[in-house]
Length: 443
Image (cartoon, rainbow, N blue to C red; front, side):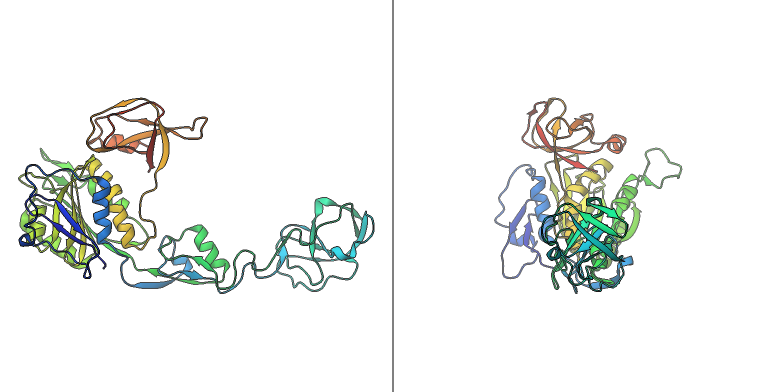
């Protein structure tokens, strides 16, 4: 895997990022970090910068597999797909009507032509009888000698003949062979997720199999002695494990092979064992909780002791802030906050793009749309907010209107569930007027 050279100060947690070295590898020895002179509290890092660090560690997983189209839904192409044929395969009719030769329509109209037969889709084209027309249906091949299809609504029937009042242009209503796709032309690029349109064009070109990236192996564990499974009786101080189901649902992707390790108590030995197992079996290890500075936040220390090149980051994002990004064994590591809303937001903004890049998807970043703010907003700047919001119908300018939900949203998972998406409030914004343009990410 091609990785930028990234260093972390063990004492202050700052990322010291150097790219373009001949050998790209992770170097994290404390002895190599003597140039870090930062004093005082660790500054917050912008979420785009944190995302860029994660993306710099990721490259498409090695290995591919060929599968039948029926088993390829949602998977990612490993190589460009070229067409073994031209499309259309032959000249064919674009509609129901009558096929004729315009060269036979001489003098002044109207013109009368006998109808000498009928061609349907799947028939052999044959040859157009001289001085006659043929009834033709959509998709049927164009017979030799014919050069136009006139719509059935544009002729008058007279027994076994048709009458044309207007002279059709040569080539009208004919789909020419190869006008959609030339022989050897690229059907799909590498890194494309296969949905209905992609599978449809592969089938149309006669390709029964497609070469795909192997699935990305992802290990997920949720740290916390307070976590219990839904349905279990809770003791005082315990909670049900929302993160497990939130993230397993987010990872239920055709190109992901998930290893769900469930909840692991805040026991250093058990956490270390789980991390070690995950790093030996997965391309990506995801954990929730344990990344802050509390007494039971063991992850940064355990990762370092386990040989991981990981340090907690303080990201200027709300909800979120304590996030871990780095490597552990042969895997990339992403440590998310324990708060479910924060875990969800930081996964969408920081973790999911990294996973998509591992899968080989060409454009791994989330796609925002522009919306207008429904009401003015006054806030304390410093961190970018991803605030749950609902969308109203578009106004006269065609832009939807985003209505922000409660400002105290960071721990309200029910609020998250009722939102249409996340409105991005820039970190430096202290005030936004009603009608201001904002970026909006639909769920």
